[in-house]
Length: 474
Image 1 (cartoon, rainbow, N blue to C red):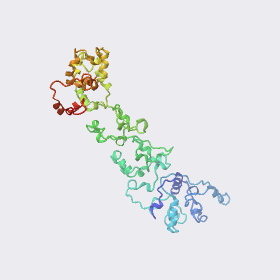
Image 2: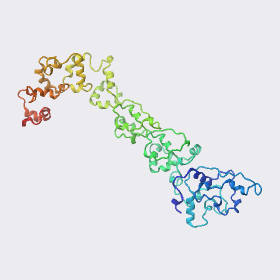
Image 3: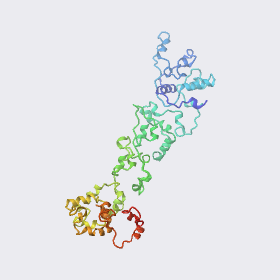
Image 4: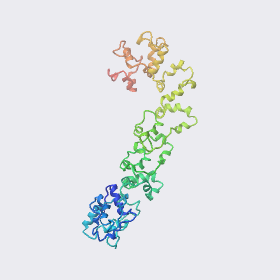
């Protein structure tokens, strides 16, 4: 007799489970006296007609059929109402066993094989079917029934039963669940190895009590509890991974951050407690706290270790200048402006800096652009204070009213710091005079300019104006 034929691994309806449980462990206060009725029923199917057919509705006779004999005249009336329904989690179907016994061709192997103890008289039906009866055909190879056995061979999932709260709370705890590492690592491995074993005692609701990401494949395959099933209360528990206590964790945690690695414990809300827009893609991939059942680990923003050093306020400008992208992970520009432009704090620049900022800004355009848009910001301020182009438009002194004959001397300033010129001017402004097609065709190079040396030193500088190698006539 093969195990695959006689043990049905598919789902069994709750009604069938009830009928099965009643047959395995009769729930009547007074078991039916089978032996007293031997002469009336030569075959078990006389009363249990639906058993070999798998017809649950005909597993037991109608109580009214007893009145044919128990009419109060020939026999005393009885108030038998049939066995009380009992729920269970055994995956079993009578019809499969009946078919297998019929195929075996042994007339002795009928209902009595399981329901009458060995050596018992005909219809000496036992009140309960012992597990040993099943094992006479289905050898139990596990050394630990709750750890080594393949649960789905004999049991359906908890969600398919109709267990009440007390029955669920009474389910035994397997020995391997007592391990100190069970929650932190072992249970995930066990789910991947045999999710059916876990589903025998747990429903999907138990997983999402802790797991933030309920869409994981392992969780999605778990059956959910049916409506009305009361489940034991359970709280979330989150172990701190070893990597999270390393000294450089805050600085390196973004490397390899994904939904799979982080969403067991964290929601996107945890990340945005520190991260400011633009939000990284890894953060946007995480579920939001409002959309999940599990509480997750609530992360509060805290400063990196470098910020806790005694002289950090004095040193932070250097750190910001070296890597402002690092600062931008947590701070927006408005955070800096709150101190650097605050009247009570004196701002970033020293007192009366505005009156002498020209000298500081000249040659340091890149540094100014860290905080300022050197085109829009400078133009806006200059216009507000009346420093507007005057006397000659494009060829006039413009914003350079401070220096007489600036147009004649501007070449020296451009050679010293072309970046400063680029804050306001474009290349087209220069070639209107200096280009070969310009109005004046004035060479931008001084007397004695060594073109070959300049080309050899930096061709890119030459190509800013020339369309090719100027030494070849371009």
